[in-house]
Image (cartoon, rainbow, N blue to C red):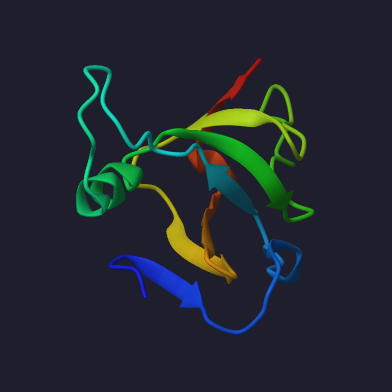
Amino acid sequence: MVAKGYSFSTPIEVDDVIPMEFKVIIEPDEVESTTEGGLHLPDTTRERISYAVETGRIVSMAGNAFGDESIFAEKPKIGDRVFFSKYSGSLFEIRKGRDVLKYRLMNDKDVCAILR
């Protein structure tokens, strides 16, 4: 279990998590394990930094996400890298063997920009 989120212990794929209404699932960018100066960051520090990550890739979205054309000039697509609000959404993890994949489930309005 993560401090701020949910961890699935049963075998589940991200495709099994279906966002509803105006929600999107984003895979946040990975936090580096070392600093620019070469210092190794402990796991607890990397975990804390990961809550503040503001960029990632859209992996899934509900049918109504980004549907309001009066708010969204352009609708991002699955696979697009986006910039989103810091600390937004709910965090969840999916365990695959030894790997832990982290995702955020958030409202479409929390996505601020598409990164090209």
